[in-house]
Image (cartoon, rainbow, N blue to C red):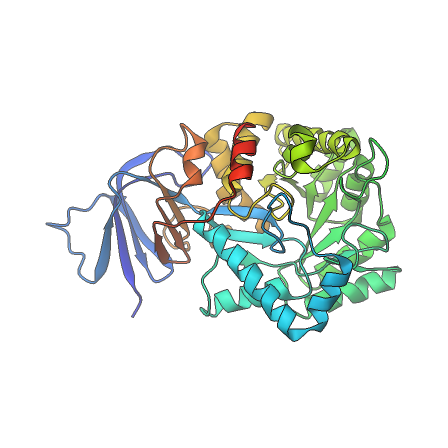
Length: 431
């Protein structure tokens, strides 16, 4: 017997591009699925026998947020760091340390859920830790969001996160072998580290130096696509974007300032742009004394920030799909702040609050290939829902403190997460 829940007296924002508040609505859920959406029910007249009735008092009910760019290996605290090469190797070789890593990542995944993010797409974490967490959630052993897991990424010697969150390929054949190796744990996508990043850079103005050659990118993509897996690529330079798109990747993560050739490649390949403003803001905008960054990282952080923003703007102007992700676990990018990415998207890219919400829900679901399952409030879709006290179309910051979260039909009342005060104070000033 499925559990039945009736969410009555709510204002629905359904997640579609032209969404408008639908007042005095009721959403009926059986098990994991939405079974009916209609004008509010009068409990004194309508038969709700067998239902748990939750009166939302006019609050706003919208689809749970979807975060397309997550790492579960860290909290995002200012002093936190991705595990070192030595630490990563210890975790993979010691069963006890690996079990601890699974628990830690499970806790961070739950934080995502409690903050209103009901689906996450991870794009590089140690070994098969995240797919293990995903499997535990799917089996009902632990509580967490829907996870689309990449597990270990694929890089090259000296490349981004090489040996830590990514395997090192030294030939086209090894690229294929590593894709197959990652695929053994049944991931949901493959992640490539095509260029370096801000924290890798040694030259001012070159935060995304090309590391993975076109031939390697193509070999990885061909093998992944043969296995039915999409490919996401870390890219932070125009040269890297071109190589990644020519090689066949499905999503460009971060991106860079586009030219006509890049726009043409996006259109020809059907690839999407994943906008990740959150990790660039601390490097580019905050006091280096607070972030511990150098003049080099601040300068390059600004280059990346401007590239991410200009890429998203150009993509939208040219009908190229744009998704949103936070790059959580980077310094000052927590596991609970997906709402900030929506606020940044509105502020820096110039979209409406409605479009930001649509992008982070149904838009992201389409990019991830799960729009038949989630991303909007529709009959037949999964009950992934976020309930907030006020209208987020008027103020996106109301998303930061959910009244209630429903993930895969499971109701979490009064969700709370532990927040990091120094991050809250520093980043609130950027809104």
